[in-house]
Length: 211
Image (cartoon, rainbow, N blue to C red):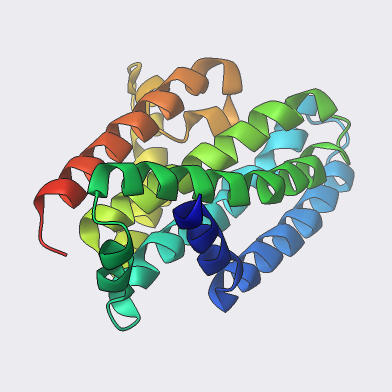
């Protein structure tokens, strides 16, 4: 419990996380009303989920900053390991704590995106997607251990490689981690699988590599 409280306090006191969450919500609000009123003939699901296709970038950055901050701000990870030397349990606590912090932010953002378009039924799925996206981003940053390279890698995958792959014929789009942002029924399994796999890789890396 002490470790969880320490992780929670660390996340809640990081100014960069608060700023990222606020900017992400504000961008979602603007895009949600823009989509809701710009094209009222658009399909309901498209208008409700389209803003998240852009503002999910904020949750990618949120996850990266949460994980990479310990490696870049004076090597805080060393202090953390002194307090909790068992790395695998520590990794689990970090993921659970980040998920708990992200969940309300994701819920508010998802509601902001879906409610103006009348797509409230998608709010729980969008909340889960944004939370998993944050955890996936944190796992990538935990492997890379640098915020900028991790952010470039993730943003490139989600906003450059993903759209290019979806434009090609074939069924590869259903296996991309961001498919659930556009089509939750098809992409949910892919998002869960990607998040679990990258978290497992991050756990293995954290366990075997020097701090």
